[in-house]
Amino acid sequence: MRNAQPETLTLDRVATPVGEVLLVTDGEGAVRALDFADYEDRMNRLLRRHAPGATVTNGRAPEAVRAAVEAYFSGDLRALDGLTVRTGGTAFQRAVWDSLRSIPAGETRTYGQLAAAIGAPKAVRAAGLANGQNPVAVIVPCHRVIGANGTLTGYAGGLERKRWLLEHERRA
Image (cartoon, rainbow, N blue to C red; front, side, top):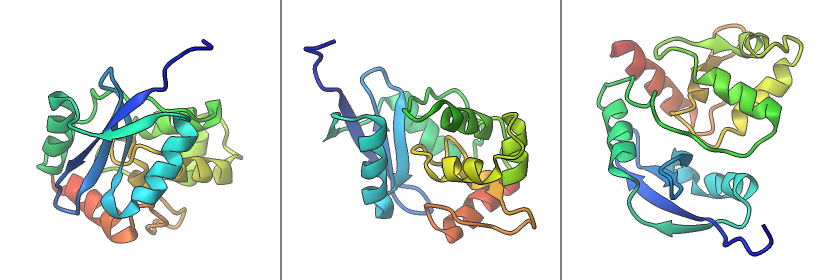
């Protein structure tokens, strides 16, 4: 594909109870990134890695995608389940991210459980690193992973947001 045109992605901004989220979709409506506005630099770095050469323009995400994100933050925890996510990443990273999507809302898993779920029980640290490289926060629910002792551990959106997301899911 020598003369392929660079991909154009759309960046939408959606207000949520825990701050504005940046929602990046492609021309087919797949979610390519979701992050909090105060972490835009991180999101752009991950996008360059997962969609090299892509151009990002401001616009509006497809209405169904935008509505699903809004519905999740309003309490419909299943609203994100049907969204298509398209990322780069290694096969291992994609396995971790797929596994994250199988954790039911309101539940948590440890990094060890996450590694075991993909058939690599000794790859706890690697699973943690993959979790941290997830470009699609909330939809690929990396916030549902906690430390072995049950404590909240690092979250790219900040521990207060992680706490809020988990409490939001438990309430709903």
